[in-house]
Length: 103
DNA sequence: TCGATGACTCAAA
DNA sequence: ATTTGAGCCATCG
Image (cartoon, rainbow, N blue to C red; front, top):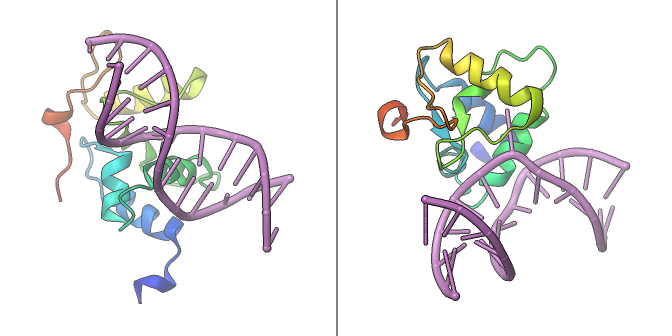
């Protein structure tokens, strides 16, 4: 049955389940989606989100606790995280152990 | 159908 | 700790 759902739809569902004020990593989302090696694709799906999507894409960061985006998008994600009370160090990192979402 | 592309991760040096 | 190279695999043109 889950095979009827596209990879993209599974990613959407998982990301949508990340609670407010929590974060997870691309690799973890990929694992939950059943493709442990598809972390890169998770980023690909989030990049192509339809305009106006309400998905909390900003709660997904890389395994170093850093934001993988660049330029203006980097600041937008950082601001969104801080707005949820997530602290970010001077070098732009999040305390993974502190905010990691574990289903 | 096929090659190129990446919002990644891991292991090795 | 930081850098490098290779692997991965869903999209896109």
